Length: 300
Image (cartoon, rainbow, N blue to C red):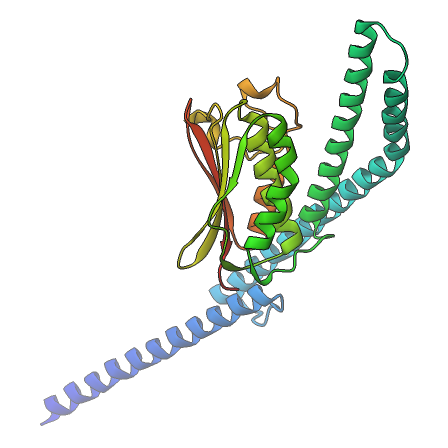
């Protein structure tokens, strides 16, 4: 009888120890969950001050969050300084660039030698390129730092596509390029102004790199989660090794240095897409042309 009592007592002790262990484990898990939740919403503070592992973990997490906050603050300050610098550059160069364009135009109206006319045209082209570069840098820096925020809203894509295509129709006609808008209807959630800017950048590249007699096609493909504005050209195409690089800031493909441009349009397009929850992709075969697709969420 005594043996059974001892065995029963031992079993109860084991169960009690197990229950205490589970309780401690559950309490630790709850505390860890609370710590992570507080860290995510920015309200974390240390609560345990002793020699336990939990206290040590809280201290390490607190130091990590403080270092992360400091790093984020430094990055934000650096971006703000860069944005302010670019804005100052834009403001200070606006008048000189405008004067360059004016004097180049006046010079081209004078009786010049063929070489002089070429020089006047080159001055005008470089002044326009400089103005385009500065404007693109200002837009990019303001998007990156959040000074200019996008305001996505449910809208019909067709109006954006048609406005963008209308802007590039004259330039396409000058190069004898057939610019066609196919299916353009689709509902999505996007900022109309900035999305039009992104589509214009894709059209600008397509018309720029498509040779005379080629075609550029714009269409909208609707999927379950996204609507895609697809711009297809019959240009030289892009080698696979270059496709991941062309969305970088100021990147110009080896074969693109003779073409006009500053290498920031695709980077800006990617920024616009990402800030709306979308993305950009390219499909291309050298010698067969390219298709750039701007994917826009269909729901917020």
